[in-house]
Length: 126
Image (cartoon, rainbow, N blue to C red; front, side, top):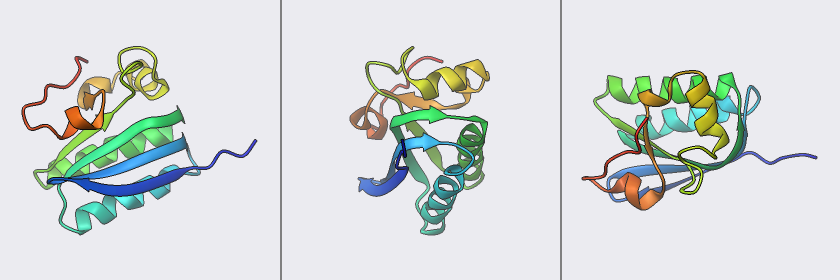
């Protein structure tokens, strides 16, 4: 079975939004890394990564997420992650991987796009 990896972009107010779907792994993570760099190069420093349709993430995918966080912080930007509302606490594969590696607390995680782009929004607890 071949699984398509896709990254589509959009905007929501001041936020750039990248919707990621498929497997985030050694082969596909450079695509996401480049898209994040493209967003920052365009001068956008508030980024939401919608990972609600990512069903597999390996260490190279986690590396891209950490690198994105580092890049945005270096330009006083913000990064927010979206994990599925019903799985954001315990059901999302990405959430489990981030938790298992002990890096979930580094990220501002939200259950949906509306929450992620809201200025007064509180992230889900780590």
